[in-house]
Image 1 (cartoon, one colour):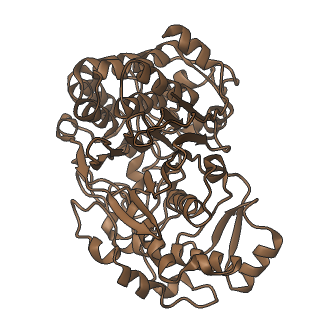
Image 2 (cartoon, one colour):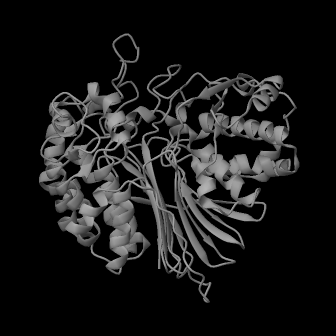
Length: 560
């Protein structure tokens, strides 16, 4: 294993492989994995060699990402794991989203004048919600895996102990967030006071010890014992509000995924407290209601933007943690409602505030990670993980090496005040003790008679529209080259702010002129966004393919 890891650390290349066609197409001819970091993809390969299945690999990949991408995800954060079990077709979403501490309240980030305290929900121990990833990994290993948790965590433990190599993305995000690091984070991730060079090795021995504790004791290895007591002590000393009761009370919830049909494709996506499945379904229902695929190119773009606008408006008004608020999901997902929502469509852009002006604003982080897996039995996992902003709260717990999230910023801090990403939300997503903040993470399965795909991406509020565009490329444009799907140029509208955000290569001058003529406001994003990871099983040819986004530093691998 040590020699394998040594070889892995020297490579950051994106790899795409295709398997040979097999006679039996009822099962895939091998494995396909795509993740945001080569070490995580290779962890899945190692798990397969130990006799594990896709669920064991999901545990290994999640943990490896938590070590090798501390700026994006980690055991101090959470996520959603979408699972498909091949033997009986059972599908579920493992909800490992963080929870607000039990001492949290709606005014906790306001000063005595009722104004938001700058950075209070972003930096430091008070910004951290109770992590869910350790509980999710233990749950998935116990209920769905073949291997002991200690085996599945072995790659991550070795990476933490031996170190990972600094790449350009780690370097860039470290430079961006270093001013918010606490002393432990500075000692761990900086070279003195400087950002480490590309090629430097980052070792996390305390995190290795924490992972070993989870490997030995499962759920209790994080939420009880010395790890829990150390976390609570560190957080409270630094001004946070965690208690042992918070950690003891944390439990995984399995939720029924959101399912829908678009043309000849069935799709399965994340359920609340992720808004992904509902918003994706609403957009697809609206596009189907007007048969957008039959329109000429400019009309397709216009209709797609208007569907995004309307679905994100509903996200802002109605969606939150369904364990705490009432959400009329049946209505929001109905075809009749979609027809009603799109009935106001004209050939001109809709003024977002004319739909319903909101007084509450919130948003969610884009520094997230995703992986997609299909194993040789046909089991599937799509998982999107996050600690929210780059390096989460910037707070590393001494003694445990855990980077704490700042997911509390995903709640509404104060009506009328936008948080770090400017996405609009309503009172449905207000802070309450034990509540899970609304998310956009959208691991998704897509299936037709021709193919099965697993896809997802980081990107904050833009996650859902990235998944939408990828799904449309697969279904409307019959694209089967999964690398072209994940590399597709992107555009996005989220209701407010009222403009189309687009990558510089998404629209040419003719297209931008035509959209402006229809009344759309545009904002080019010079820096690409997202880091999609996708795998595809071509059922007609019984071939597997995998792709890692050109925008990131991940890797994709297929093997028999």
